[in-house]
Length: 421
Image (cartoon, rainbow, N blue to C red; front, side):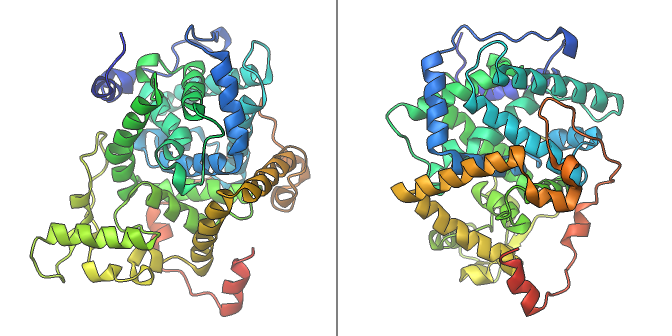
């Protein structure tokens, strides 16, 4: 029986979904079967759609992954695995994740294929992560965690394609893309009743909208301890394969896409936020602040309670006076501005071709010549084999407060140099 959207949401946030592991078998006993509802034509159509939008779809996944770090149960398991607590191990782990994902689009899904082996490897690693985290009392990789991670791969692109310049090649591409990720979710052990990619695109978007409003927005407003360290380690590591990454800019953009109050990007965002603050003031003095928590939906998962931020109306008289934006370094502001032009360039025929070719060339470098990583990690250590286990580190994550300290102001020359490096 097909679940309604409300029934699905109720199920995914049930005690059973939180306590049920991603798999009940041992890695050596795993079997993977193609679901009976698998449509090969739709699956391959989605692969073509990905390559038509590969540059920006991959960007949306990277930002989605940053958002996933804000889920406390997922973050605990990641930290306990000790495979991404340092810049080096984060580089190895998340480059491996990226190459796994790309392999699903590069290859047909058939027994013995690269994508089949990749999915089996990912599934096996989830089981090992569950066992390790459970032994340390840090929880498990649950069915709910898998579903929320699935949002990281599809949520932003499905809900806000215009923010990336993503568009269909032909009618039905989005439905095919939804089917693709429904199959991938099934393949990595996600039960159909917890798979956020539903039987059609409309339902999937409804589910993703609820997850954004009631999970990711509140969690990114009130991030768990060590979020900053883990997110920054990943972005710093992946800079070696994409030097356009600016850590502060990417975290800001993630919070903006997640509708975190006070994170604005365009003039229309600023106007909408001021309008919302005025509504909440309801005739009170404009110098009276509005608590950020009053602008959020009720969270569906438990997060630590902290003193909410206070948003003042006139702080948003311009983008430059908005506190979150004002605190960005010059390089972060530059990368946000650059992103605006990249998105608009991507909407053009020539721009899309150029940026997609740029991405495909980058994939070749990731696999065969990750030259920027050579200087940081050494030549041999920089190469990633997606079928080998990622290395372990002894890095103790730093608390969020370490990253919230006021940083010494850079000299003008260093600020300008940071724009290009």
